[in-house]
Amino acid sequence: MDLDADHDLDAVTIAGGWSGSQTRFVWLNDGQGRFQKGPALADGNTQSLASGDLDGDGDADVVFGNLNQPAEVWINQSNQSTIP
Ligand SMILES: [Ca+2]
Ligand SMILES: [Ca+2]
Image (cartoon, rainbow, N blue to C red; front, side):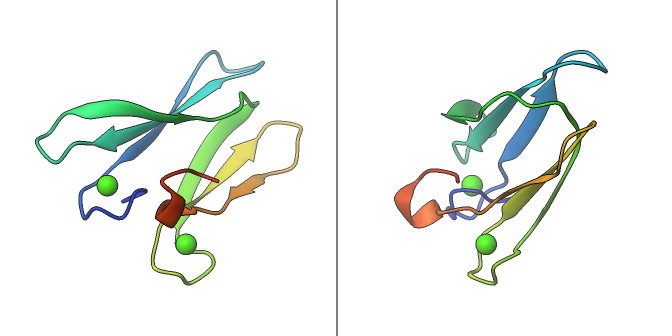
């Protein structure tokens, strides 16, 4: 997924155990194969994630699937260099 609309692939990772709160990170590709930590996301009980352009504005949005909690939809505001 290209979160900052600079035409290279970025990543979102989920770190932590199977149950309890997980730390979620955005990693922005510098275009030379190196990733730098991007905007911080709030921790969540996330077990899965998916990406797609949910609002049809051309950038990648993210849905977090959470255990025993509602899913979260994060709409990318990449023209402001932040998500959500
Ligand atoms: Ca990018
Ligand atoms: Ca979008």
